[in-house]
Length: 240
Ligand code: HEC
Image (tube, rainbow, N blue to C red; front, side, top):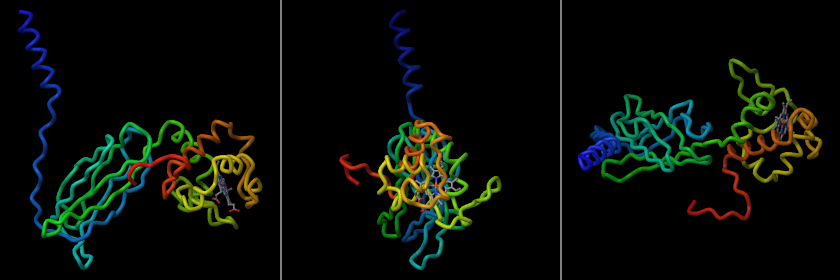
């Protein structure tokens, strides 16, 4: 009796653990020589979240014209998933995939791969950003206080004030400007306003509006989204 129970538990477990059947690789109907990212790269969202926009890739031929029916595969590590993870490009030469981030904050890389008619792989890499709790808090504060001046794009809900400013503020993804500033300098300009770093007084001081923890959350957010990535000194980075 006991043995039977053990066997049936094992069977139930192995059924639960077995993976979903792997979809067969579609047969390509055409081949290109180049892969370009159309949209959806460098998006930021909370850990484990689905990204708002799909990632769209396009296969082109040697003349730059889109190729329909080319096979594109997506490979990611660290728990990031793409749905679908492979497919043939449509009539516009494009394939879209929905991306869900892994459960650890940081940057995730996706490799998009096609092959030319000789079977030679053509690959490009795309980054997506998973924000941890502190950076997510910073992104919410950014939406309330900062984005209207620091983002030059307007949206249906918000008109950008960016172009009215004499010293145009930078987008928070602009690593070339923000990466050289220390955490202390970032906190100083947010708390004390532009004058704290001898910059334009049009950058308001937030020291009385935001708590120290909220300013730290903003700094964490700025560091998470910067492009190129922010790399603190004295930390060893493997590989890339
Ligand atoms: C009313 C418009 C306005 C708002 C709102 C605003 N800023 Fe600024 N900010 C500026 C301007 C203008 C500068 C550029 C100053 C210069 O270059 O002289 C600036 C500069 C900065 C800089 C230095 C890098 C750069 O872009 O030149 C940082 C960092 C910064 N702001 C962070 C913030 C944060 C964080 C918030 C929200 C808490 C915020 N700002 C809200 C106008 C604004």
